[in-house]
Amino acid sequence: MERITHWIDGTHWSGTAARTSPVHDPATGEVTAALDLADGAVVDQAVASAVAASAGWRRASLTQRARVLFAFRQLLAERAEDVAALITAEHGKVLSDALGEVTRGLEVVEFACGMPHLLKGSHSEGVSSGVDVHSVRQPLGVVAVVSPFNFPAMVPLWFVPVAIAAGNAVVLKPSEKDPSAPDLMAQLWKEAGLPDGVLTVLHGDREAVDHLLRHPDVRAVSFVGSTPVARHVYETATAHGKRVQALGGAKNHMLVLPDADLDLAADAAVNAGFGSAGERCMAISAVVAVEPVADALVAKIAERVARLRTGDGRRGCDMGPLVTREHRDRVAGYVAAGVDAGAELVVDGRDVQPDGSPDGFWLGPTLFDRVTPGMSVYTDEIFGPVLSVVRVGSYDEGLGLINANPYGNGTAIFTNDGGAARRFEYEVEVGMVGVNVPIPVPMAYYSFGGWKQSLFGDSHAHGAEGVHFFTRGKVVTSRWLDPGHGGVDLGFPTHS
Image (cartoon, rainbow, N blue to C red):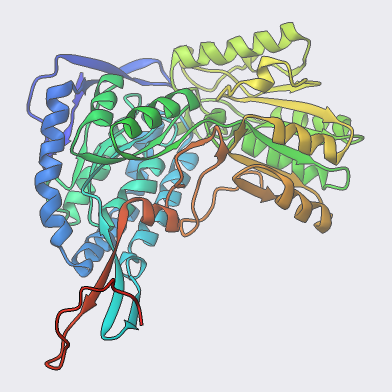
């Protein structure tokens, strides 16, 4: 049995873990490794290593930091297929999807390579007699990143490169379900020249996370996960004086207007609903069809779903398994609940015949029609390959449905009417909006994040907001006196 352990101070941890967790191959159901889980003492060791490294890394020049970023970017590009293979082996998503995840993460690395420019401050000369003012942004120190199972490479790459380039030391706590890709990336950081201790990979469960949230030497926490856990992370970490960006859950809607290209909309619904087995926070889980297009749209979606091949992600299939047996069973329970509630089950993924081991965690693409807002398949974030079609009578009804939802992560509108699209952009209460684009994940130089219960904290991920999150501003007012300066003056200083 392979052992997967922590990466502390530039090497694999040599201690003995009191607790371990099994790592599965979702396509076969096999246990492939035992993962060491950190207790409080190991967390303290990891943070102490990061604290020791952060002082020297902060003093490293911007040029030195950028060179490490450029080197890491090259190594990650060269090893992208190796990282993707680890993702497929532990998460289950198909290889092409895993490689796409690494590619999107690389875009953030490339953005962070520009940190010397991004950290430039401002300067004002002569704000008063002989007085100048300038601003700088400085690193926080040690920051923690807690990432989810569904993007074991991309989500860490949203945060870690920006934090490191800004001069921080990072403690990364990846998901215990698929830990190997972050471990490999840590080794690539070392090969790129990153000093030992600047990046730590700490494996664990809630015990490790809660210890990080309360640790006095951790200055900030970045988190991606479900809304209940995001709320817990935000409330706990802020109560201990930390800066927090906690990205929570989602229920993403795709509004299809009567003038839309229905073939384009059907393709988009299938791609966004069933890619990565629906285990995406940006997945479309609710198609809001404005009548009279629902019958035709549902037929087109069902036709495309029938052609999808579910199976082992290493066999060229379209969709892989779910990440664990427990999660598969949970999603299958929602399918049963939808039937019991009266939704029309157009395609039943429980009947799938997978191209893979019978012991894999399989559930095929599932399509419901005539879903109503009170049903659990609509209200809950299922996080699986379940697509619901909700029928509405007008644009206003569809917009009201979307805005009434407690989540506000991503949404899309499909239409050929520019005026309707522009109105939707303005009126919808969601953080990321796509126009004829089903998964509107921003490019790295913009910031990722939603509204309402999809985000706790004020900062979104990467882009300018990411740079600001991992730094703090300082304003310096200075006067250099000349030989002819005046004497003592006890009056209140004013700008003149």
